[in-house]
Amino acid sequence: MRISNMARGNTMYTSNAYLVRGDWNALGDWNTLVDTGRDPVVLANLEQAATGVGKPRVEQVVLTHGHYDHVGMLQAIRQRYRPLVYAFSPHLDGVDRILADGDSLMLGDAWFEVIHVPCHSQDSICLYHSGSGVLFSGDNPVEPHQGVSDRNCDCGELASRLSHFSVHMVYPGHGGEYVKAQPN
Image (cartoon, rainbow, N blue to C red; front, side, top):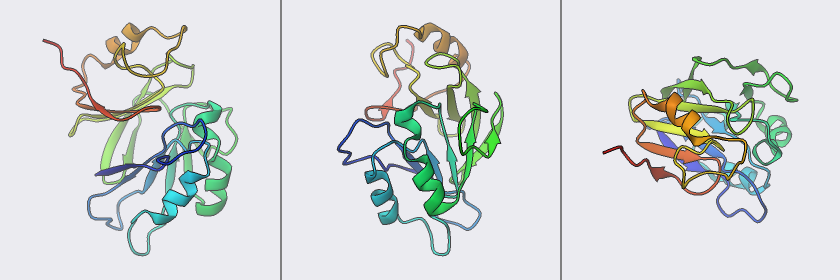
């Protein structure tokens, strides 16, 4: 799988918006946007992304939670690409399918598990791929020094939930991706 941040070059406060593609842009892959951000640069970057001949640039969107900086471009992306939209919350406009803890979704060419973690918000999810150890964490702080500062979120709660997962690379909602520190 290939992962690119479509919010690069942003000019306003926004979340990351990760485009997940298969290694070969095969017809069976699902070009997936994890969060939409709120900066129009996301649309410009999507138009430049190599997503495969004859394939829609964005076939599905998965929202890690419903905060404005993660869903601001959702309507524009729906209008332009007509993707399926997944979220844990049934209260977001434009969502086609409601996710549940433990669901599996194909992002690019890899299957990810949905992990509901009501830490940063009640509708927060993480997406985990066991084969590579990739985790999309949204705004949930996987490690105390990473993620969004949040008085309502106990990093230990998320750490406990993720303790049986072998997380290697974290793609957070804000900031750059990083290799997760492994316990000694």
